[in-house]
Image (cartoon, rainbow, N blue to C red; front, side, top):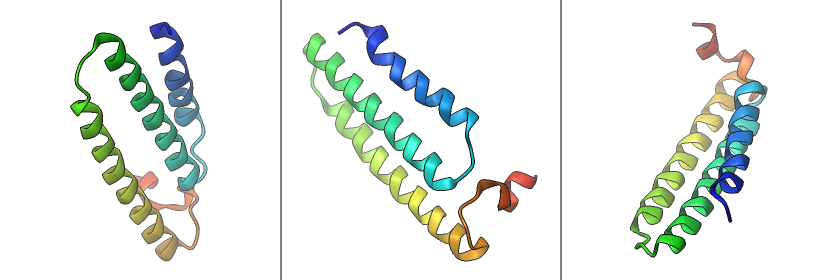
Length: 94
């Protein structure tokens, strides 16, 4: 696989993430997809270079903690605001 073929889905999802920010859950799903694509790209790159995969393990741990924080923010936002629309939160009104 070429490097351009691996980076193109990541860049596409980043562009979609920057354009569409309606619901918090859709933003979290896009961030998770980007993280999974980065992990796959790292694994392919590590296999081609014959390096050890400790960095992928660290990235997976960071991805899990990011997921837990995102879900906890989503739950607290739904409890306080009643929905997960990003435009109804007071954070965007700064």
